[in-house]
Length: 314
Image 1 (cartoon, rainbow, N blue to C red):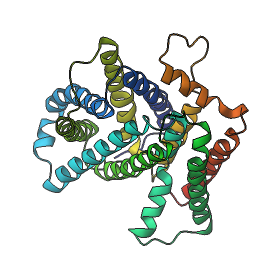
Image 2 (cartoon, rainbow, N blue to C red; image 1 turned 60 degrees about the horizontal axis):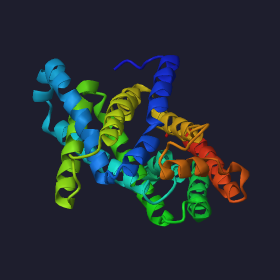
Image 3 (cartoon, one colour; image 1 turned 180 degrees about the vertical axis):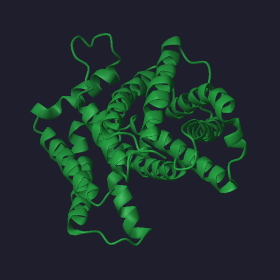
């Protein structure tokens, strides 16, 4: 499969990241409308799958039917990991701030580096090991700083832990996807992966008693925007970017997403926004407060750690 020019790949990634960076705020709005996190995750993937499946069947029917059993199993496993990612990350936003949740859920280079040691038995150089240590330190500092900046009614430790579950599951989803994209077309892969994730989440929602229908009109607007924007445009762009060599695309997309989150805060008059969303704007503006120092240092540590790990190719 031909690798796209670096400039084009970065431009596509920039568009994807710009769209994905709106997800946390849209989720906050949906939660403020009383939609449970599991319902948000299931509806987001379900709507995306309903849009993609007809196109995939029309354009890649033969490929889908002829998929090797191993590739089909891997695609469905990728979808299951995607379901875990969205359930855990969206739920984390009930308990911790948007800033900390996004910082932790984008620690993918750290988990890929650790997987190379534990699963692949690879030996890492000094720079990569230093990167892992710095990333771990940044992650721990995010946990330590969160009680000072989170809204008081939340369980920040639980939220941060769920965000890390989201990071680990997303790493598995992306790594499986990168392997499959060498031999499976984009439309076939994302349609099956999104459909598999939607099925897992919808079944989980039914067992948990989380409603999939009956939401308010504003809630449906936010859910549709999540499905069309961050999911169909953003995550599909990320899957397209697997054609960038090595794991550079993983590192770039999550560093950019982290940066985009830092510049997402709403400006101007916030009186018409739900209280929880306004609270998140305050959290994202903590740079001038004393408790923000640890948050800022933790992000710098994570960024430097990611870059050092990336020298290894992750």
